[in-house]
Length: 570
Image (tube, rainbow, N blue to C red):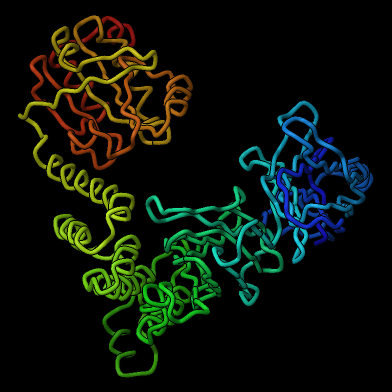
């Protein structure tokens, strides 16, 4: 893969550290290849061209100088808990390297490290030296600060373990003709809740090699994974769910829509077929994905995407035009979204039938996990989760059903509370910790203030952040008059909450219930989206819900009057 260098001079040192052992005693030769690819901020990451100088202000001599920058690679083998022995080393030439050596342990897991100056080394966990393939790695250097540099395996991600326990996923998207997948990633993510004896390499993403990829993992029981293929700028994004189990061999290929993917629409559905037609993947996924109805609708979806209006334009038809196309072979224009929802309906109808059949409890569980009953009300879905308790083994039920059932119960409670926690009602009490770990009770704050705004937010929420300057200003103007703001973060981690609070200078009282939308406090308040605000009086009665900063200012002026600061500004 020939790539043009479009990035600044960087000193790189890569170390590949062997971290495992195998079982053969004879010395075996290995080969590791690596490549360094630069991508400038002025170039589309999917359009890197080795022979195109456009988009670069650097002279050919400067580019050549960067190309000669030394990059060293060292391969070591663990001799013990702290000792490592170098078994191969070398230097990149023209941003490529081939390293050869011998190891007695075979197959052997390795780690790949890349060091640049005083920066923390980049690390690629647990590639595998084995008799079938030797690892190939790629270092992607992005000039743009918006994209992090990446160290990736290319094409193949194998795993140490017994073949009878492994699942193998092969993907071939090389037939996609109108998408540039030169720098596309294949990613695997576990979809099921708490499956048993699962082992994936910490490498859960790898660069496609000529549109192809191969991923291995270990499954102690059947479970769902999602496979996504995307370019870094999401000009293409394909997605498919796969049922893996011991011995599973799955082949992923493009669908009719894969070459018609339009950014801004849903992910392009990929197709996944099992080599074993008696597998659970065949029972659950292929039940609808290989049906004539679904494949025909997929063709219709591709046609809708191809004929959709360009961005920022509208496609309309007059009644006369519709009459002219009626009764002809020409298909009337349809919005891609409308056809996509029909695709989903075919899928969910098949999955719901499997989920409610219960002849194969594991198939029913997998159907529920992938989205059966998705269009039904919460109470109906909850009934089905409880029904699974009577057919599943207790261990499977406790690990994989109980968390889903509990989450659904919270969703049901949240939906109910969203309708009842409204103006004129009493706000639910809560006691939450602030950033220093001190517990803060809502009604204690109410007791010492006349008006309190409870604001649900998160550090990742752009609309929440956009409101902060106005809220901070109002807090500064009215806090001495009896106004307080309680910010309730629903971030998933303390670090995100802390960094977001410091970066955006969150004023008032800042507490957190760090478990997302299903944490106890947002459920009690019926929080469906953020930001959501509640304006309370000193007794806890809700005066307003979803109050905007401008509405809040007007209410505060009515209650407290104009402040001296406002008079000065006027």
